[in-house]
Image 1 (cartoon, one colour):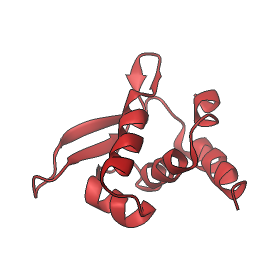
Image 2 (cartoon, rainbow, N blue to C red):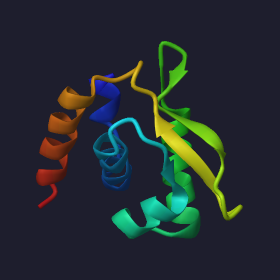
Image 3 (spheres, rainbow, N blue to C red):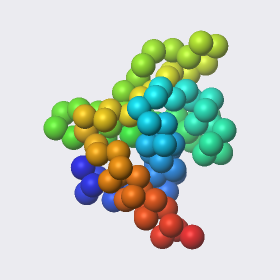
Amino acid sequence: MFKKIRRLSYNQLKVLRVFLEAGGKIVTVRQLEKKVKLKGKSLGGVISSLSRTRFRDISLIEPMGRAENGLGLRWMLNERVINVSQAKKEVGRMLRSYD
């Protein structure tokens, strides 16, 4: 899975970091917008690509139903696919390389 993580774009890494920091909790599109400063189609494209990222036929993130306000879906990191503590280190290292 880390080979796939190393191929992610900067925005994909930022969104993945939010999921990793959520600690197995469900994340809404609104929460993502606030934390990564992406909106609309830009954020939707990143979420879509992360949901299509598969390892052993399991998606990296999975939809968890509609948000309460009806705007967008709720998403959750699939922890069966990824070791969260190692992924946090790898994503952090990769994001620091952009600075």
